[in-house]
Image: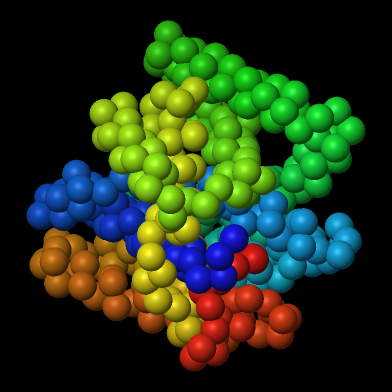
Length: 350
């Protein structure tokens, strides 16, 4: 892979896309409906999974041992995640309409334990917090993190299986099982009208196709700057514009190619990592910040002013999270830290 790539920029744009869509979804402010009509959080999240497949496989193959690989993954994801969960639980005690003892016994401690264990679905809410908001969850964006962690855990097993049984049979079998899982659950949701099937369909087995496609693009290592790949990129964009991401069979390779092409096929658009990698922070802090603003009625008074305030808060808090929590947890050799050097190339290995 070229050292000069746009992965930092692409990930920041994807995280920002999710934030923009949630700015309308969580507030219901009609002037902001244009954000949901213009951007797709579903496409952004699936592109994240594809990029993860590419970069995490690269990280694994560039690690001297499985222990080093897991250490790098833990250093990157856990400090920021744990900080956001703990701060939300502490802030919730101030926002809650319950007394502190009731807050803790009615679900505050349960929220903390469940979310620190990545079991967000067990306790998505805090007692007496955001009860008057359209959405009650404290941080609904965290559902993807448990899938990401499970990808990290599954990758070494997939690699071992691929080396012993052959890469093509293993990847094809996993892809087919992932597609079948999605098809069965989505059909059950349509047949019964039970939304639980849809929720289950978007969990790890259903998202595995995107992760696999990203990993395949890394192993194939095409020179995406060649003209024929620009045509393939246009085809992928056209297909996604026409079919969206609902096609569980063909959408994953289209999304993966789109995301990886933006990172590697376009000319280098600058070292966006020189100020820090804020994409993860933007993703994990934007939801509770929006919820707090909704709680205090900011979007009822002036939706666009509240949105501007949300933008400032989200990026400021993401920057603080990076400099105070995420960056110090990384090793000096991490590309995230090296990217901050003025002459350093863009981020390479996560």
